[in-house]
Image (cartoon, rainbow, N blue to C red; front, side):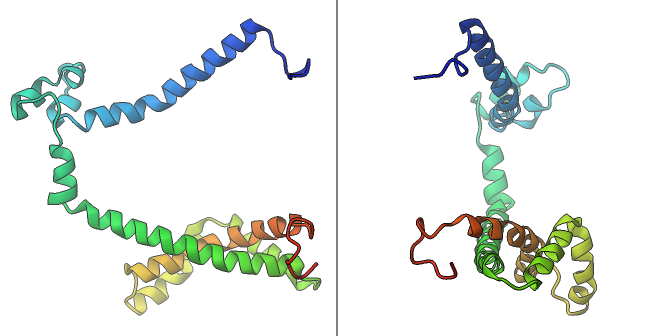
Length: 191
């Protein structure tokens, strides 16, 4: 049962829901418009003569015989071999997240349970690196990577992204580790 504070007048509730729906439609419209246009030929979607061509699909019908086409997708995925880039991105994401969370969890847990002063200074240094723009961190690696001719390879990208992400992970995991009480995790050492 809602308390008096949580109850709103029906008119206010209706206006709030209406604004929320309007905001959701406005935020989602560009995505749906691009999805719709992806099934049209370029002449319809980027028509300077009449923007309604993307709705009617005049040029798409003229070129393909149907109002919708999947030529754009087959061209990107098969002819241009976009699947290779998608697979590369999947591998980079998988390895960066796995390595970052593994090292960050272990490091954050160790820093949260440490009673020595170095833990504070280590977190402070990680916070400084976290506040720096990533390009300042990467620019330190670049000369070495170019010298060894390993820039542009998949493992190099993974190492750089883990290095950029690690200060962020280390700064947040100690707070998570400190909130775990012995009652919620009775087998956790270090309490």
